[in-house]
Image (cartoon, rainbow, N blue to C red; front, side, top):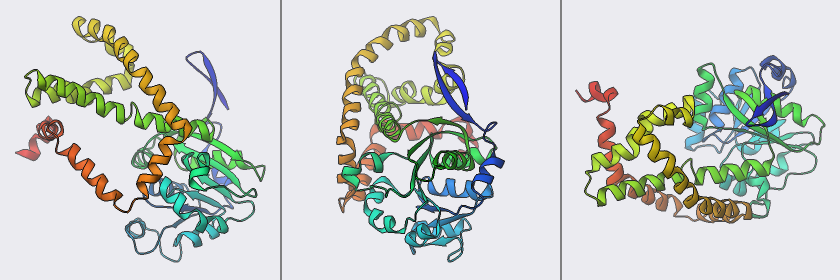
Length: 352
């Protein structure tokens, strides 16, 4: 593995140079990869594997939307598309890519299908780390591995088709065959990873659950709402409050930060913005640090996963979810946002 320096800490990273696709194809030449689930990650990983010459089959419940989608993507019933249990029994690598809640519900159907020497593959540490809640305890006679792309299934597929790739983390929780690590790296490359960063199942799920509840989604949405409400309370119009809260961030600043870093962003804004942002950044860090610590402890203790599994098991969960999202969509802030988005220059011709 290549050794790279991240802010003074040396880490080992697997690159395509040292583990090229040709090597991945050789490692997987006798494997049958059974992708269970065709919702978020399943389609992207299955299609990328297929396009990279790996023997792939898909397993989903017949007759549903996922079955129909898989058929539209070219998977053929009875040849490359099977009910979940049959696909799991046919596979030598079982990619368990149904949702976290669905893994809890389907595990007792899948576990008996695993054969000695199979690889049980996850893209999230949830089910295994929180086994006391999910009941997912892999048998001792299989490899238990993970490749977790650092992006949505949509990005995994789009980046692959664009000829690039997406970074992923990987981990081996159980090495029965003595080949678990090699199989994992081969699968990581074959699904379209650019670089592979080693982790553990625990670290992956703790960081992932903290990140999505924090900066990636929860904190971002909450801070936007707080700033918007403050501006509105002081007499600013909806369009002005939205532009200064969301539009400038998403359409300009965040792209420059992604390309060049935050210090470059500070160095290339007005002196007024620069000084104020540098000073207030410390206030926001101090205010939110205790919240992030509470969040991390809630993740590590299993409280977050308990709430997720409890909520998802309710028969009216989808109705409640739809109502929560409706309230967000119909809030003044996001109604203003819909109008502002429609006025972006790229939409001028559509609106003409």
